[in-house]
Length: 275
Length: 267
Image 1: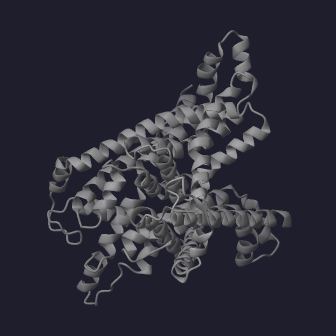
Image 2 (image 1 turned 90 degrees about the horizontal axis):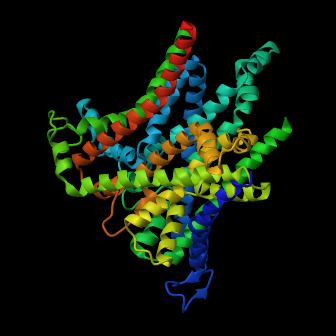
Image 3 (image 1 turned 60 degrees about the vertical axis):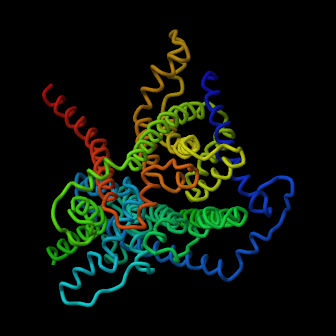
């Protein structure tokens, strides 16, 4: 068997160069200033401190708020859909889940772009309202537009894991709950929902990760003035050219996600130990 | 009462799917519009498709997307598969260490991975362009190949390759004639995942490419500043290709199963 042992070696080398070193380079940029040449490098925490300025802190709070709202809406809408799908016959379920997955395979940029012609001031919704004799609503470049784009793009990531854990569930648990006198509401919250928590956590992590780091959706649907964490990073690298500050924000973003994952895992194991 | 519940469930499912598919449908519809408007349908025409084919910038972006996706898929599939096979033969410590590293690009936000690679290429003084895009794509596709192949390798009987070699097969033969055919479903899943990930990628390509090298996503991003139905024509083609690919991949196993069942019955 030792013949195949060495097969991992190319990837060990590859992942060191392409995964580990980039993280160190990023860290190096984050803790130095004007480090484009190695000669006059200086270590500093200035880049992280700068993030505490109100302008940037506001961006952070806004991203976090939008992320949490998106996750909450996706959870309610997605759970309901997954729950309904899980009650269909098995063959119908396969078809419906396939229909949920197809949009995930299509380029997110193209799907977001499509919303522009629906939501814009003389877009499809407003043309429709006009025909009904109602006054048009300005929807583009608002929180609403960004939220619609995010929910449409990320909802499948919530539905799939929840559906997986719901369809794996043994039906006899809910039947037992009914037999023991629980009403439908009790059965749902005390049995069904509890058993689907692993799927819920997976979905919540995925949607939160995607929504807090996106920069395409706010740019296309929120306009140039709409800045979230992702846009802030993009600006530092593409237009401002402050790679040090940009790296510091990237590291902060990665740490937030890491903490969120840790926290979610803790909830998961906490739930399991209770049982 | 039961009927009402059933009706409202059906309505809810329909509304959700409308939410997913209306944008896609609208994009496709307006690619056939005869005027430049993206809101009023004035008549059927194929002029945006003709404009698309005549636009050399877009056609070269299509070529970049396809060729990068094919190359990145081929390389990351080979790299990922041999890593997954080798992984199962190593000590637990090494195994965990590599799987943890492998999870970094999967769990990290795309933009962070993109920035890291961009900084790496600039530190190594590799000029941004086609090569950097290809390297980056291999780098983010391989972890997905490993995660889809590795579970299949683990479910294999570890003595199976030994048996082949005891019977006189060379290690290479044992690998290609015994191990690989047995983990084929995992490899196929990996290929699909890698190809679509690479073909659809925007964020990483956007940061690591330059010097006029653009894939479909980058060109769409640059063109969205003005209304341009040529993008709709391009979207329609991309959507149809992906739609058919996903459908075929999901339907083939169903048909095979059906045939197997039919064969059993006739026997």
